[in-house]
Image (tube, rainbow, N blue to C red; front, side):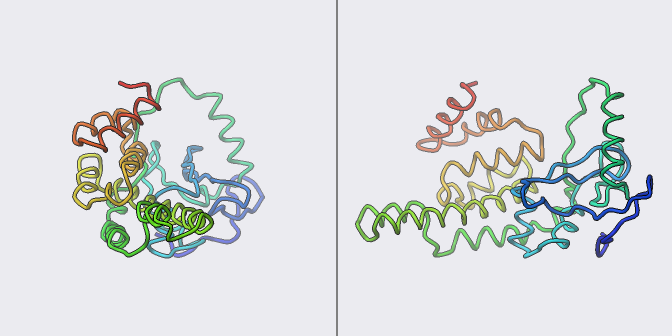
Length: 253
């Protein structure tokens, strides 16, 4: 992995120079990382689980975050590497290349390919797990406790709503780290690990849905099909809630 990005890159195809895009622009929710050899790109959202995990668990920001994220991307279908400098091709030239690629593209569906270099991503498994375990064992108030305090009259409605908003923000970050961890474990281990470490007890049945979302990204497995299969491993409330989710979102299988 390179130590830094060039602040100003000379395009190899035209006289223009440009600054590599290393994060979403202020008014954007995502940004592309282009292959260095072709016009394919990875669409990276602010909420991408791996990006969030690197930021939250490792404390990475800006250029360091972009470099770390780039280092765990799998090669492109063409064999090239995804790089924030786009193979030293400026946005204008990339646009022209994309336009020509669309003209000549066939209708052949590209086979699913895991977006991650799993070997590189796995290097962070221990840190992700340590973060998750600390959060599960922490004394931070969870949703169930917050509701109980409100129902017992220990807090007023305004305090309850403030606590709920804080909880949602905090748990959304924690869930992203769990998703990144689940993608490292893969579909054969992720759900059983969540069960072993009592993540459903902490976050509710929705954590299984979040894990299924992550596995769709990393393994190409459809969320509803994954949850339909996983539902067989649970009973009681969890089974009923998964069944309700599947019925509402997918109309049943």
